[in-house]
Image (cartoon, rainbow, N blue to C red):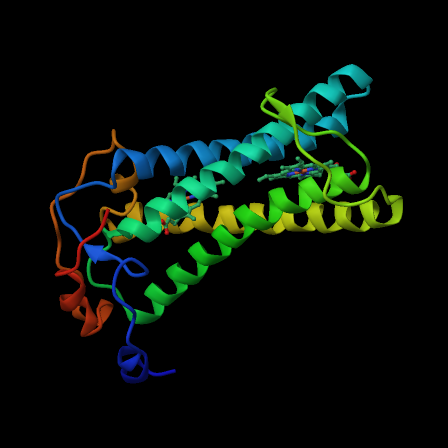
Length: 223
Ligand code: HEM
Ligand code: HEM
């Protein structure tokens, strides 16, 4: 698709699309939701993969409990994030950017959100199908939604593990994109998500970087 055709695509207004908001960061709620769910995803992945190196059945069981609880937290944090995201949108700290790059960023975020939902749900389904009890943070036991079925459990477990690797690949690409913004493009995308990183003064990026939509976005609000 050429630049003109891409520029002709109208991106819907907030909350789905971001607004340029120079001089501010994402709200503390957004930052807390982002970093706590990122930490929970890494804890869930680490505790699941860590079981490979452990033979002691008690420690393996404890790691599975940590895994399940971290995974459940991801699901709760997702509900919180989507609430914030759809009520207030996401501020745009990238400034003018080529429409193709903007679409790629939206797609990557969409894929991350899809995985944040799919992965814990598949995990819960594996537990249900293998008659494994899952506690809701020690408060009560979650009801089983699927009948005990070892064949189905094995298929769901394969799906869950595949989805986990897709998630880790997406996170690696997401981290690379954040570093590209910070170190190469030198904009405020990462600084706006990290309370302790110094923000840079707003900068006009090269005209080739932006589409005509860029100016319009600067008028919209964000979180
Ligand atoms: C498991 C790990 C992670 C997950 C699941 C995740 C997920 C997400 C999602 C879904 C968004 C979109 C927010 C929205 O649309 O409201 C986002 C934004 C963002 N993430 Fe992450 N993230 C993770 C780790 C990281 C890491 C390690 C960094 C950087 C070191 C990072 C930096 C950012 C930044 C800067 C944004 C804002 C992007 C923008 O302004 O367009 N994230 N993250
Ligand atoms: C973001 C959240 C999650 C991530 C990143 C994740 C990741 C993983 C990974 C990488 C494995 C494979 C470990 C191996 O190779 O042996 C795994 C296995 C497993 N996960 Fe998750 N998981 C998540 C959420 C959940 C949840 C919420 C549950 C259930 C409440 C769950 C239940 C399981 C179970 C039962 C297995 C063992 C499957 C088997 O028998 O092979 N997971 N998970």
